Length: 304
Image (cartoon, rainbow, N blue to C red):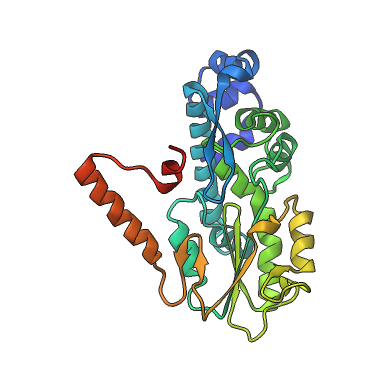
């Protein structure tokens, strides 16, 4: 029996436990008895841009449970895309989102935007945190690809969520965020097609690119205060907000072909490549590792 059919046939916690390879009592204990304070360890890590990122790392049994759910959902995605190879929407789902997917990476994402006149990058604010318990549960009930029993959908949301939303640190947050992000992708693929652009997403990092003479104003416009600053266009803002997300105004940038263009950390002006500074840093770290026996990334050096 296929993974997707097993999920659609499931009706109880016993069914979910069996599918995920857990005893029913063990799953019930994790979900309904064990306090949240013992399920996760919370800590902060520094961001490259400054500030800190809050991580909620699940304890070992919960982590195993989430990992099995993530693998199961990935199997379902492979099955859906394989069975619907002639369905354009299924193809769109598999092609435009490159993060946390089998056989896809930052490189496949960047390659779509190689050698373009304009490359426009935006980030979504609090991507995992904006996907709450209700959105997770509602997706598995309503999405035409899944349409799960409401009890099963509730159990999935209980496994996946911490403090009422997807936590950073859970093995199943990436795949579930991709599933729910597909709603946004569907809207933005259509916008890109209408305006002669290419669109991809890697987690919370959205990219539009084009070789058109003028960049489409529905996607991005120059600021009235500074024509070197670009801001999201009205149609893009509307579609992102309509899909339940928000754009981070501090991480919006337009890149021209005459300067270095980057997508998911890779240079895309001519061929996809890493930055020269990155190569130099790696060489320096390797040298220190071999001569001193250890090294720290620059961001941690500053914290010493």
